[in-house]
Length: 150
Image 1 (cartoon, rainbow, N blue to C red):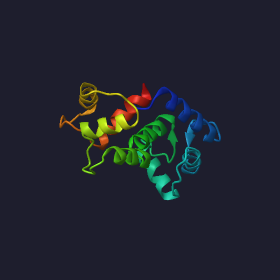
Image 2: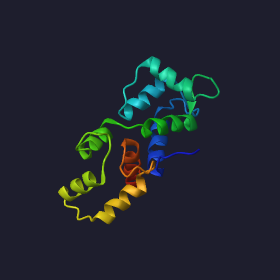
Image 3: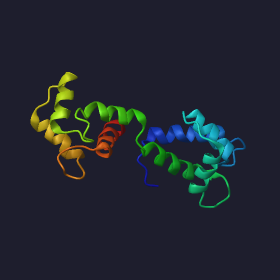
Image 4: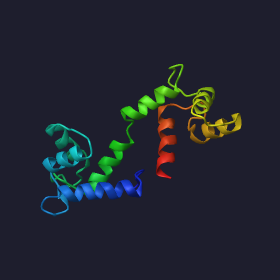
């Protein structure tokens, strides 16, 4: 499976999955999934749980195995969360939806990082997938994912 999750995240998810596979059959139901999601800090309504299972249950059995669960969590964890949006907004001083090289340098300097223009350009270039010379939220998330998965 193509996943952006780290080995540690996969291990943690496997442990959580196993805890709530009550009968040890390798599958969890919507009720069990709700318990897993709650354990991981997500509170989800019953109808949403059933929809989540339906979306990733290729067998249409009403339950999911670990591969299905991992796929679902990979999608969930890949979505920007409030903390990422807040961090992005902190960098985006002029609130134009982008982090410019000047904004990145100013913030890094204010945090005590001694960075030159070449280093800032290299950081932007590495993560600027649309090559517009600045970082949008998706590119910022990619920069963060690179730092945390290394």
